[in-house]
Image (tube, rainbow, N blue to C red; front, side, top):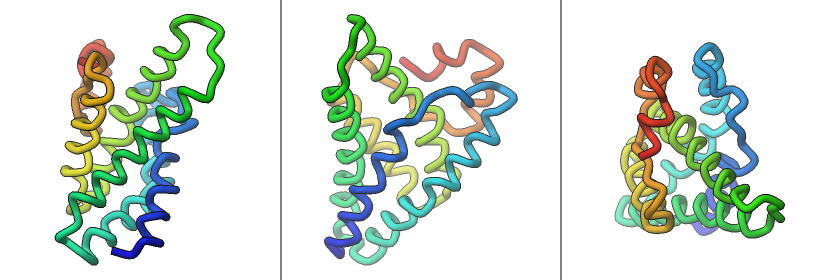
Amino acid sequence: MGKESLDAVIKMIPQTVINRNMEQFQRDRYQNSLKTYIEENTETFRLLQDLCDQDPSRTEEALQVACSAVLDAIETDLSQKKYRRLNSRALQLDTYKMVIVTYLTPAVFKMELPVSERFNEMLQKEWQKRYPKQPYQIATEEMVMAGFRTKWYQAFLR
C-alpha cells in the first residue's frame, strides 16, 4: 500500500463531510443532490478501493484509517469553532451525522465498490465508539427516500 496514496485518501476524505450542509435535503431535491455528491466524491473512494486492491491483506487497516480521518476531521472542526450558544456544538455534530446518514453512506453504497459495505459498517462502528449517545442507522438512497414519507429524522437517527 503506497504511503502517498493513503496520504491522499486521508487528505481528501474529510471533504465528504466537513463544510457540508443539509440545504438540498428536501424530497424534491435529494436525488439530484445525492448524484452531485457522488460525482464530487467518487475519486476519493476509487482511490481507497485501489489501495485495498493493491494490498488486500491491509484492507481493514486502510478502511480504519479512512474512517478515522473522517471522524478526526469532525472533531477538529468542532474543537476549532467558537460556539456562542450552548447547544450549537451539538447541532453541528447533528449536521455531520445527517450528512453521513443521508449522503455519505448512501453514496458509498451507490458507488458499488467492493469496500462500500465494509467502509459504511466501520464508519458507523467508529462513530458509535466516539459518540455513544448519538447512534445512527446505516441508510441507502432507497431508505432515505422512503423516510421522506415518514418523519425521516426519527427513522435513521437512533
